[in-house]
Image 1 (spheres, rainbow, N blue to C red):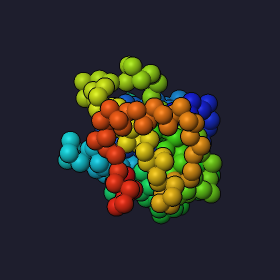
Image 2: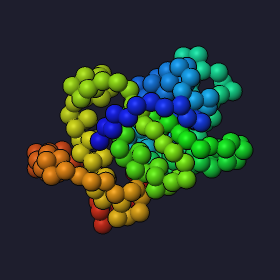
Image 3: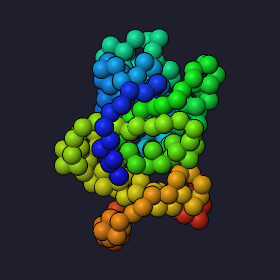
Image 4: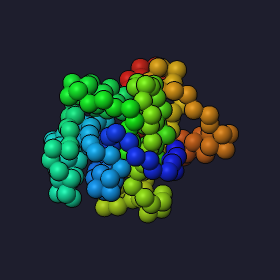
Length: 206
């Protein structure tokens, strides 16, 4: 689920909203290092944050970026999206409304969302080139005071299931899944890590 791509200069950075504010910090740091001249903070309230926050993810992200030194006039805020597909579509609409000609974008998300965010972007906005990045670290050091290891496993299982089912629903491009990865997923489901599994009979993009 984590692609470990090398960084590359792009026309903009898209910080994809979530409950993990380290994503905002990483996106801001990439801006300050000069990987792109524009930062788009994307996200309203999604499946996790709607029960945690009253303020849009994008606005929290933008405030962090400004506090870290990213100039106000180099930040755009898209605060209406509630899922990954909308992150991309609404960001595209916003950039087009501002007259921004984008040929490449650096997607910044949580480590386990790298593959799914790229698969979604390639489906929703396939005309441009993408690179993907996430805050550094390993699975073992990812949990913190806000995100427990148990919650993390539940979320990862749910996101992996979306990689399996969303291509046939038209939300993402398909991914090759090695058998050992499927075996691990099925074992975690068997152990009860199913809190964020989507109902495939009534699935909506999330």
